[in-house]
Image (cartoon, rainbow, N blue to C red):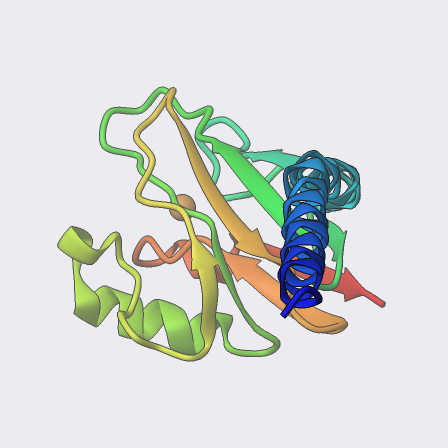
Length: 181
Ligand code: CU
């Protein structure tokens, strides 16, 4: 009978210790939260790395023009590294009203075929056949004194042609496009 209070006190003491231990264990949890916040910060640094890496992939600008009133480009050869971005800027230097041109990149040996199909496609399609797998890229029809632009990814390494598909111009107005490895 006399020992009971001591036992009771002993149980209370254990409960208090456990209670303190639990309270103490809960305390470190908020302390971990700031540590968790610190983790995303270093993660942001690797995320920034791809940005500079994408800069070299930025498109390179290539300029080409027609030669006055002739049905001719001022360059017979263009080249770009396969898979890189290309911005092709074409200037129509003609002054003759209605003397329009375009610049169309096509598969090797298909410039006349594409031009014929382009004539059928008509001026509303810029004299360019639609959904034709021989056509890789093209500007719109460009009026005299104006500039047209097209952006595309340089195709697989190899040789291609560029041509003006305005009816009749393809006979003299073309060149070779090389995609380098
Ligand atoms: Cu032309």
